[in-house]
Image 1 (cartoon, rainbow, N blue to C red):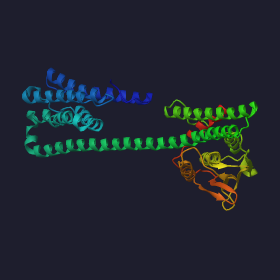
Image 2: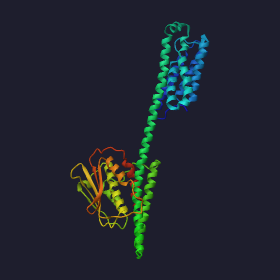
Image 3: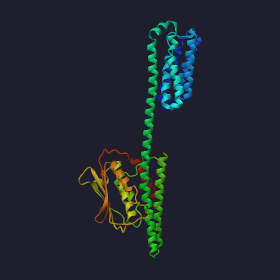
Image 4: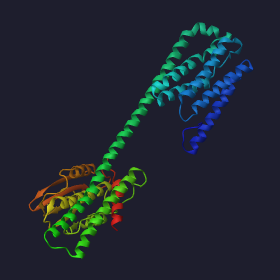
Length: 417
């Protein structure tokens, strides 16, 4: 496939102009041939070389064909003195064959590129002999032949080393891209844990409540049972929506740039709405200065996950919880930061879910990436999770991408509505 590196129209036009110009120079150089066969040989070998360079990929077979054509012309000129040009041996052909060697070594494994590259290097080395063997130039060869050989040898070595260097750069770029994708997958795995663990924990908590009520010998009323089962259904739907949205993002079918929460109030309303029935509604206290203030996306995302993880732990690890307090205020020691704290008065209880996990570990990494600090532990009457997050622009940089998490959270929130 000719031309060329896919790109914008202006690039295609520029490359087309350069290709036409190179072809024109090949024809002009061919006119230096003393006979028509010599002219045809110079033009054909030059145009074949130009065509190979215009391929989107330096294919080994195509490069070998161009090198063979150049070698055939050079050898013929060496054997037939009447065909030797006096002034030019094919500068354009020399240039494009050099580019072909570089691209060949850069784009293909050495086991595939070695043969065609060696053939092309030989063709490049023999190109000057077309002119140097002309009777007018024989004296120059006798005087400076050693220098010409050294220059040609240095040139072909430079081409080989440059091709290898560019190949290493390309390999490094590919490796960095693979590492970035791996880190992105780790981010997605943490997202999947955050959202699915919260919803599945809600399902388990409500199922335990149903079993507790029925095990006590008192059958719940149809209305209460319907409420509990509706909560299970809602949490299951949210878990499936979160997973479906995340998989869609991984497959590039769902945009990851949608904003799920425009401000703090909207974020709190969304995440508190996922708390399972049967638990006390959280008491929310937000400083007026922070309520409608725009937050840096990374900080708002970290605050969202802090509240989400704290509520998940209430469902999963506590019993007898009568109060959940969510307080967001200006940090007392840092006016450019906000303090997000979630406190409950529940007692530690066993959970049917597997012990351990990466909830608080991943949350701590997320908060640090946003430029904040996280603390969690027992207090006088329960458990408290606290995050200190920056609220000033520009937000600190980190490898967490809020857009992805906002898209997943937004899809789950829309499902609930």
